[in-house]
Image (cartoon, rainbow, N blue to C red; front, top):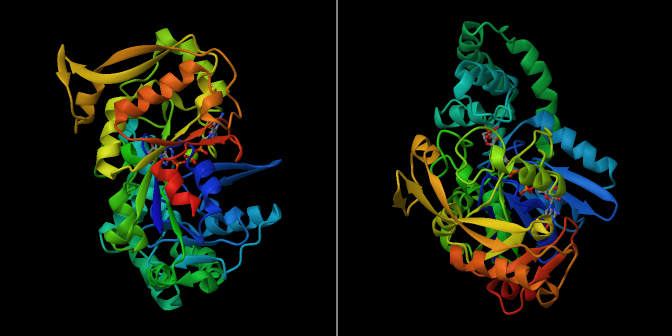
Length: 437
Ligand code: GDP
Ligand code: IMO
Ligand code: MG
């Protein structure tokens, strides 16, 4: 069984919590794209973990975790994270953590280029995480990237750094920043690569063998559908493919071996960074946005940037369901809406009084959109930690059913708090079927 978990909105839907919860039923958890731009928060008892590069399954001592070929890996960030979670008592050995030899490395000049690019764009900036993600993927597509396997040969690593830095420094200097030195970069990266060596693996072959032995594999998406470089709100996107097709490419798994796709959807929407956000709560709804931000702890897991908050956008989520082929949805953060009198749901889009039924390709068109809202009554009572659908207040049940109808996909799981056990699993759902055996 191979299941993919994908964010349906602009990220931070609660993928980490759901992956951690479901990891128990799997043997292997693998990331397939992105890098340490992700921040997946997981709470287990009194311990809090923020996973950035490592799959959220790493917290389970008996699971094997994989960093797939589609990822971009900053070796310094990798070992910082390995060391941090080791301090919390999680052992991370090469036996249970495999890094693809085909993944690309994020180098110090990628970080510098990310800064330069954002400075250059000024008002038009993307609002990236400044971790060098975009420039590393640019080098991959430009066929000059340094892959893990290449870096294992010291001569190759040295030569590639020198060659790539010549070009990178031209841009860095052009925009008034200090050039970087190849010898210093090599001195920093080479010991990290040596430490990485035992973790390196032909991960797609490893996953194929695991599947032959009937092992269960969970593919953990980072970022989300609307941040996908092909399908998201371009150019305000990340540089990888979090969508379902990306899981096949980025883990090296044949598409027809994937059993199912689970969409992670929040009961409302947020966005970090710039870019269009049709259902964003603007000035008139600032109080509601603040309430949600506080109740939902809507601050970046790592950068602590306040997240922009908005109403559930059914048009965007339908688009995500169609693109990814969601078989089931995990709906998170129901409890965050507990205090609201009324809850709005964006059910359609209008531009100049005309109804728009599809998700526009151009970001400037998206900015002109006026969402058409339906307003549902709130439930004004506590749902934190409820574990049975029947125990939810009637208006909360109604809200959940409404979202499912709007998106056209069943809801198989409802999350009612950040902890593992603050969860409702819906009986007879497709999702329950996947996880019950
Ligand atoms: P991810 O990037 O999709 O893994 O999501 P993040 O971890 O960045 O952000 C989600 C935040 O919401 C985290 O702080 C989670 O602990 C928290 N969270 C997840 N599910 C729930 C829930 O059902 N209720 C509440 N109150 N918090 C939740
Ligand atoms: P998780 O996995 C939310 C956003 C950035 C920026 C854009 C491009 O925790 O859901 P990048 O550094 O990737 O080039 O930035 O994408 N972004 C995220 N937003 N959650 C994330 O990850 C994100 N990863 C990147 O804020 O707008
Ligand atoms: Mg996150």
